Amino acid sequence: IMPIIALVGRPNVGKSTLFNLLTRSRDSLVADYPGVTRDRQYGFGKIGPCPYWVVDTGGMLRDVERLDNAVDQQARLAVAECDAVFFLVDAKEGLQADDYAIVEYLRQQNKPFYLLINKIDTGDRDLLMAEFYALGIEQTHGVSAAHKKGVNPLMELVLSDF
Ligand code: GDP
Ligand code: MG
Image (cartoon, rainbow, N blue to C red; front, side, top):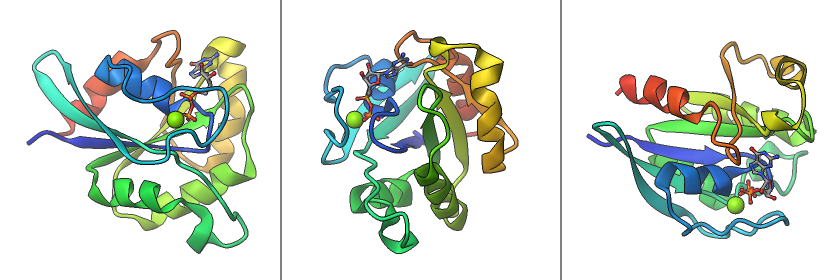
């Protein structure tokens, strides 16, 4: 069975960049402004002999006050139908209130999720990663989707769980 991996996180954290890397396609629109991926975008990828599906989402957050509305509907659907979630945060911007809202949401779902601290190319890796420990997630993964760093070992780890 091919696992389905959903990419979620605030706009602009690098979901579509990672999607393109994982699927080696240009299908998912990457842009400098948030919310550009309006619908779920599916892609197929393979690491060694292990195939997988990846789902890109707009991952928009509209209302952090009300958790019910916090995660966009298509991101919810992506989470509902996936086998594992990649929760991306932005090391360049640092920890945001919306990140807490997303992690709260993910904790209520019955899906394994991985915290990907993206854009670690923008500074000192350990320093950039440190503040995200506040999210209370034990295992974190520093990656750079744009520079293709840290992604392969993570995928090998994730795929070995299936
Ligand atoms: P999305 O809204 O979460 O899909 O984010 P995008 O993939 O569209 O990326 C938003 C911006 O962040 C773009 O300008 C990307 O080039 C940039 N970006 C994505 N990944 C990285 C990374 O690993 N390092 C750096 N420095 N920039 C990145
Ligand atoms: Mg996107």
